[in-house]
Amino acid sequence: TDIFSDMGLINELHEPKVGIVPIGDRFTMGGAVAALACRRFFGFDTVVPCHFRTFSMLDQTADKFVAGMEGSGVNVALPEIGKAITI
Image 1 (tube, one colour):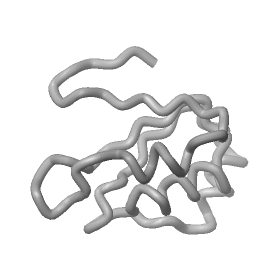
Image 2 (image 1 turned 90 degrees about the vertical axis):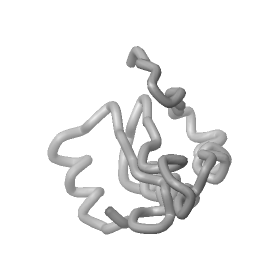
Image 3 (image 1 turned 60 degrees about the horizontal axis):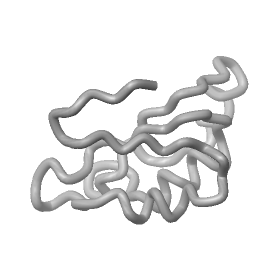
Image 4 (image 1 turned 180 degrees about the vertical axis):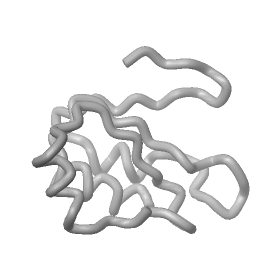
């Protein structure tokens, strides 16, 4: 999935409070673009980045996403591989 303007329509219709966004930057959005999508189109309380650090051709950290979300007031939940998180 990449960024697209209908994300705003999804937010308007459904008002999701939790988002799970891909940030791997190969087959999906990268961290910076995913952060832009979250900030511009959604009103998430919590966002969970996914589809990164799973194999070598993908981004191995969420650093760009976390940096892009700084100051947004959105909780970024970064689960460790194989660990559960509570939202």
